[in-house]
Length: 339
Image 1 (cartoon, rainbow, N blue to C red):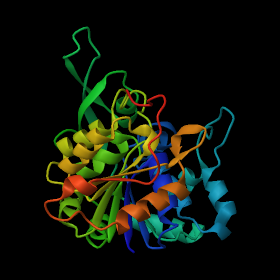
Image 2: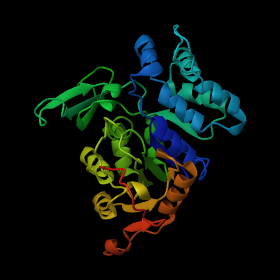
Image 3: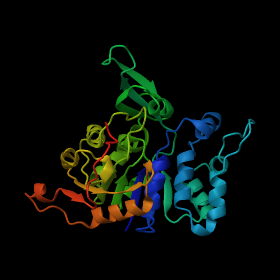
Image 4: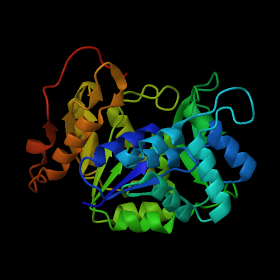
């Protein structure tokens, strides 16, 4: 099975870890709009792609025998000097960027060092910028403000309404998709979106014209994996179904085959069923969270849930209501994690 996972950060890491249990042919397509922390510093100082999310994806796909290199890539320098806060893997990738120039070649070379099983690609070969329309920052709750930058959007105390994506030339510059990433989506058997920061890691892929078109045209089965809890700032107050409504609002032509969500994170399953159906998808509920860690997916459980979603036969024509919701475990009651 040729699998492609699109996203960034910790969400993409867990998806890749889960997919590795199902196939060795995994391609990660990673966001490149990060402007915070070590990645942001290297981006500003050297004009390079932000390496952090690329590094995390590579570690997720690294071979077990490269455990030392994986740990080294994740190690961050302490102290208060110039290196403080930098991950070693970020610096290695930055050096390769300057040495080789081509980001695809850089990631292939670093992949050999880590024994990566699969492939890591940037969604674009140039750093991008996110801009969002946000309400709730003024006394008048309906007044919309524009906020620019991934960190600013991810941590805003307001409510994000819509995002836009710009190339390195700023507003009005259309981002250009990485050709290898586009080809991977078109040639895939399954494509996964999410989990992750919804506005800054998941939705940006849909705003790159070439990637959007590939996602609409691909014959692959498309699966959306929902987050376990709302993200403070970025999606505070969002219900599971609102995540799907926002996705549909940013890419109305996209059709999806399956939506995977945690049983305990969906207080009103019928609403999720309707939101999934609006995307053409079947909703699949399963216990995919880590016990005691409400915001973390269990890669083993997530792999099983994805596998069930992929191998369940589609609904017969004209009979969506009888088989729309597939529940792997009994729906639990108790406190609702979503507001």
